[in-house]
Image 1: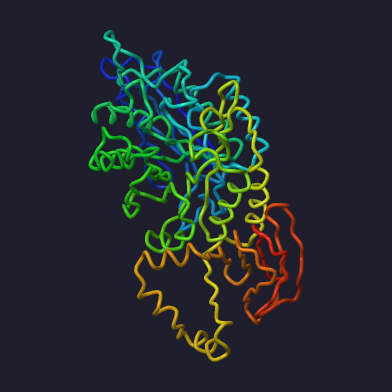
Image 2 (image 1 turned 120 degrees about the vertical axis):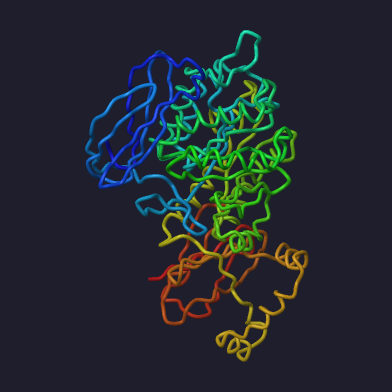
Length: 502
C-alpha cells in the first residue's frame, strides 16, 4: 500500500442474488485511531473488489464484510504520487501541496474507440502539453461520432432494454485501463457522467436507473487519485433531467465518494449554480475571459473555460477557429488566473476527429499552448487577477490618491450596471495577472501598442521580458527595473510583457 495510490482487495464470493451493481460489500480501514469506511463492488466471475485511497502513512488494519469477507493489515508507505487534485481558493493543488495548473483537452468518446485509436491517442498525449482530458462514460451520438462501440456500461435484458443492475465488466475494465494510463502520464481524467448526445437510451434513463449506475461507477472509480467528476457535458440540454435531479446526483456523488474528488457541471447556455457547496470549480462554455475575475470573486472557486471553441475546419461555428485564435484564448484565460481547455476538429477521411475520438493531433495550437504552459509553470506561484490603474493620464495628484486608497475609479465602477461594466471591459481589456510582488504579466491580445508601461513595486527590482506569443519568443528588454517602466513593443497583436523579480 502506498500513500495517495489506489489499493485494491480482491475477494471471492457467491455471485449476487439481486442487483450486481448494488452488491453489498463494505470495508473498514483503520489507521492511527481513524476509521475509513468504503463500499466495494462486484466485478463478475464471483470476484468482489474493494478499493481504497490511503491519504496518510502507517499500519492499516482492514476488515471486509457482506457478500465477501476477509481481514488483514497492510503497511502504507510513501509513494511517488502527489495525491488528488483539490481546489484551493481560485486555484488547484495536489494533496501534498504541489501546485497543479490544468491545461486540458477534450476527447469525448475516447473509451468507445478501437484499441488502435486509443493507442494513437495515448502516443499523441505523450508529446502534448495537456494534463487533463475531458471524456465520457457513455458513448456519444453526433456528427463524426457514428461508430458503434464494442462494449457498453451495462448488459441488456431479454427484452433488449439496458439493465443497469448488470454492468458489462468488459467495458469498465477498458475505461479503467484508459484512466490508469492517463494517470500514469500525469493526466487527470475529467470524467463526464451524463450527456444529451445519445441514440441508445442512456440520456433518458429513469432517475432510479441513474442512481444505480452512479453508485456502481462511484464505488468502482472513486479510489483512483487522478479523476474528477463532471456531472454532465451540457447539462441544460439533458431535457430528461430536472434541476432537482441534478441536486440529487450531487448528493449521490457526495455520498459514494469518500475522498471528495473535484466536482462540477458543464453547461451549454444556462450556467449551472456554481455557488452550490459541493461544486468545487466553474466549468464554463463561453469566451468571456474579461469576466473571469468577477466570477472568481463571486464564487471563490477556480474558473475553467472548458469549452471555448475548437481549432479546426468543420462547418460548426464552434469547431473552426484557427490555431492562433485557440492559443490567444488560452493566454486570455491564464493571464488573469483562470484556465482553459483545448479541442481540435479537423475534417479527416477516416472520420477520426480529436475532439470526438482522439487519434493523432493535426493542429498547431498544442505547440503554442505548450509555450504558454512553460511560462506559467516557471512562475513562482499561481496567477491572481491584477488590474493596473491607468493613473498616468491624471498626473501625480491622482497617483497620491491611489496610494492613499482613494481611487475614484472604484466608486465609478461600483455605480456601473453589469452591462456597462462588461461593455467597457470587452472593448479594451488587457489581460493581466500577478504572483504577489514576485511576478507581473500583461497580455495585450488584439491591441498593437508600439510602447506601453508596466507599473512595478518601487522597492524591488525586476527583469522585464517581451513575449511574442505567435513566434513563441521571449526577449529580455530591461533589468533592474522598478516603478513605472516603459517598454518598446513591435506594434502587433498577441504580445505580452512579463516582469519577474531578480
